[in-house]
Length: 210
Ligand code: ADP
Ligand code: MG
Image (tube, rainbow, N blue to C red):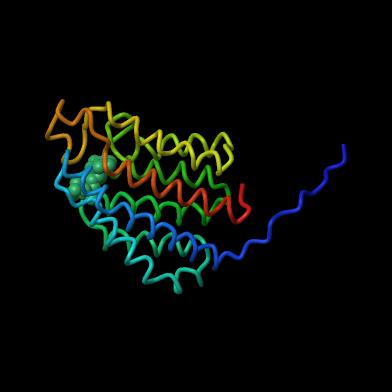
């Protein structure tokens, strides 16, 4: 059979980085209060504020980030998130991006890079699946990426991953202090992670990336 090259979309990477950061920031600003409410129920109520600080910091660096290679932009953004989000979530989101940055230096496969980055987040948090954290969104997103689920479809699925944390008992972070009483509430980190994953998938799909 003759292989026919499919036409590939022409992607303006700098513009796309700018759009992704702006869309993520808008989404977090819109849901800041909801994320704080979720965290107030099983934590200390600052998750929305923490994420807002992180996305504001990223937005302030848009021009520099957009001028970098994808790997360098991930590394720089990860460093910014560690410093700006704070709390437990800062080092975890930071690790995700820092590790994506280093993975993208030796692979061009997003599923491989995400697998490596999610594993690093789990090591950093000393946590695993089912413990009611943002990993309960990251693991299924990684699995769907490995299965080549179209991004537009994945964008519709991620909220469901966060909802799965409602029935879980928190085993890590502040929420774990509540034990059984953490059951019945969505994990705030899972909520922010699903929100951001949906926004990113939508922006990439919009840009013609499958
Ligand atoms: P803090 O708990 O310091 O106030 P945030 O409220 O910003 O920080 O973030 C809380 C979120 O961080 C939780 O909802 C959970 O998803 C995530 N988290 C906390 N500890 C861990 C951990 N050890 N491993 C993975 N995720 C964690
Ligand atoms: Mg908190």
